[in-house]
Length: 217
Image 1 (cartoon, rainbow, N blue to C red):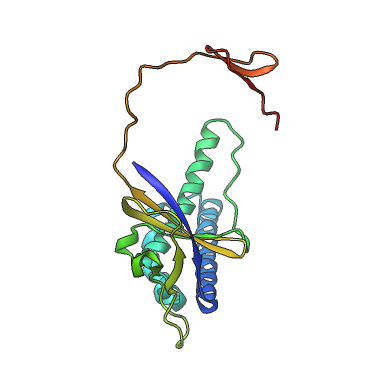
Image 2: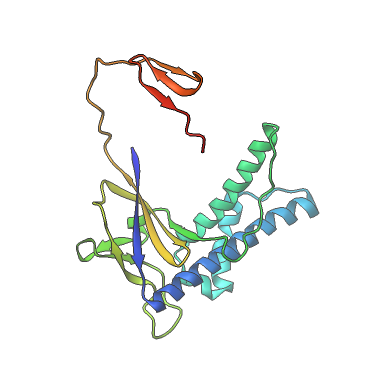
């Protein structure tokens, strides 16, 4: 079973700049991958797939040195997001729903980046859980990259970390860990209850006579 744990980050000002730049580069890559798929189909009637675009990443990192500062698996996740957007589009088309063709991400509309294999890609808790190491390489000579960022673990982290997503929400930054934990089944119960829905003017009435009003938000 997988669980999500969301914690507030407290980056320094230089770290905030590196986080913002990482988001910006990921957004540009997302838009470029989307544009490539659109152009390939529009101009040549061909489809460009996930693995084909992933194979271009080493060339991108060679030609655009700024992408060398971002972990390769973070960049692969960007391509996977584009692929998921198209899969969702084709699924809706097939189901006869309003499809909504994948759209470009404007500034401020791309707010997270993900380390798909967190512990293998340099995301580790440090200092007894008071800091988290984010492996993004420095852009400036005076910088050590994002590095070790202060984090507030307001509840214990459980299980084995699988992924880590760094997210911007307004002026604040967060990290969301997805972990794998052993399921804890509820104790067996012999009790049962009946529910009658839509009983005017109530939302539901139970077999024990309890009446719940409609929320009417």
